Length: 604
Ligand code: ASP
Picture 1 (cartoon, protein in one colour):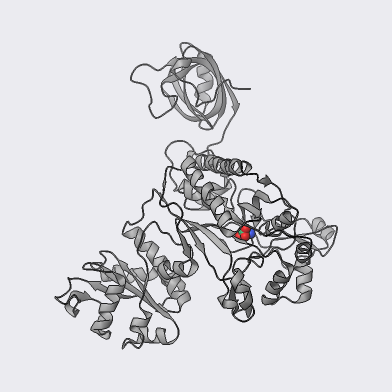
Picture 2: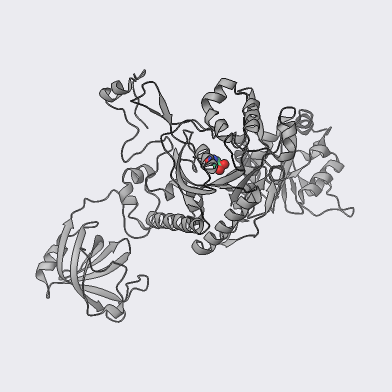
């Protein structure tokens, strides 16, 4: 080894030892005849002292050093003089007096500062282009370490419970998880393509038919989607499948794992155990979304029935058109300026909401417990009856000083609009405790949803998810009413995982495919292998997949999953370090018998 100790290791008890350290120059302070170096490696920082009187040759080398040079030093451990200790460093009691110093590698001036306090003001594209430098900085280095610890914990938890870790192919066939596939041309079979797995869904089910009973994999998945803060074209899942289980068994296993994982690797407190379980319908009703952040209340309320036939056109029209009128209460919001209230509309607009109706309560109720016009501040109150206002105030739970906000639109506009507004108000009103881990389960999802554009039913989860036993009888007649044996696990408003009990009978699987509008030949071509496998003795089975990046990001308090990946891509799917994707040589295309129809444009 080029070093006897790490830069995080030496203590006062090592005083007098001769040691060799190697690492990067974090900082250099030059006091003429005396140079101090902060030497950094993955494990910490150690102060090196180079003294002209003792070692003129070492001092000559030290005076050439700049930040990020890689050096090896041999010297003697010495206690720092009293008053010069640095309590912030684990090695802060000692320094190493350099006897010999050697430059192993020089470094250009980095495009951003590596040492010292982190500032995130460096442009992300620069950080991505020089990712290997960004990873030297404490924040990302810490995130990678945490990710490692989380994966290691998960592995050992599952090994202890008889799970086998099995790798499945990356070059595969289309696996429907609802996204676009990445495809890979085959040279040996011109005109034929592999698809990269959106998940190992079919392989893990085939492993259950193979008798594995308990499988898991830290699996790479590929989805060609438009990216958002918590999406990447390739990401990692804990993918898991079990035989002879019901939904409650899978949920119990994952819950135990997440509780132990949190206790081991997070300083935060789990809000509630056992994790609350909520139906999909309840989640939408109360939070407007199927991945509610339950660290705070601020539940939505529904006044559709109350204001149906109201004199207020906006409400009346929405209700008559089958929409819903829902709202929430902004605590102490009644005194917001008109401009601030108007500003809240930005949080509902992206979802298609045309406006926000509002009622501020500026004074207490009268003797009858109602709020007369003079105690309200509201552009809509004059269109509503006293009774309607009273009903809305009661439903909202608002009191003096609060602001009621309402959206009237189709449910698929009203719900997400208010869900987003709720998060914003939660932040503004400081209702979110950052030290909480609020897990919950969402169950009883619909199995299918109607896709108006494609004019057919599509699987909400994926086509291998089973209907509830009692719902199979209505699959064809009332597909929209069928509930799935599916479950999602949510943490602080992020869906961190989802899974289901699967169909394991070929007849039911065939009915499902037919319900999704697949022709017999399509089924045969795409899923014939599954149907056939089910005919050779398939155990009842089910599983789940957890997004590793999302989990790590939540534990690390990272705003984006890019912060917990070693080499992430940009929002347009580009790798700025390697400059990928990139054109390939004509020779390669010719081998694949592929012609590019349009001139390649460069990835942004
Ligand atoms: N394959 C599913 C997914 O990736 C998870 C599962 O059903 O186990 O979302």
